Image (tube, rainbow, N blue to C red; front, side):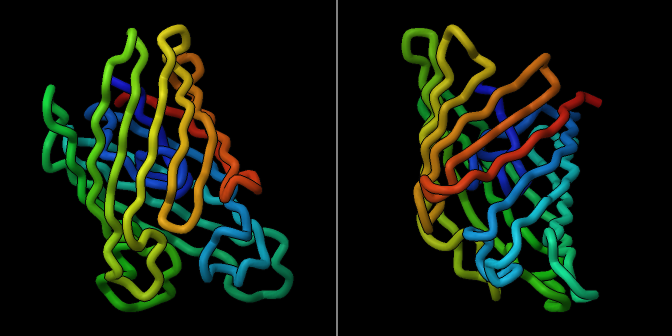
Length: 217
């Protein structure tokens, strides 16, 4: 089974898209991500880069919850500079020999359901992931669809990604994806079984990435 890591939005995924991989029951992540201003949709009017810190917990084999706080950087004045987001993911089908895993999930769920407050990173999606063993290396294929359900949709339409984990360095994943708006390429790396790093060329032109620490409770 491929190593699952945290995506730029925070929950488990590839680079900027979710996958249908799930962490082991009892996995806890705490992380910090850098979000480039050019790919933030309406948040900050594309004027400010952001730092996002999050807490992520898989406390059942099929359920993951995530809380993220996103702060605009170098914004002058006393205006609103922090956005808070709650996300959840539910696995409907675990990956089998001939079948992919299936996950449904959403970002910014509380704001979207309540209708109160600002909402910049909404998403409601279904995603499929299947892994293939190729000469002891792992090839993962992900395909999903984001529904136009909220005021601001981070994912709208089809998205897809390919991950490759070489047999000689299974802690490394090389990823190419399309997140409904642009192509991204990057890599993730797990060090000492706890420290998770990832970096990406978002839109194939600017840097985004992050660092997280993983523990098993």
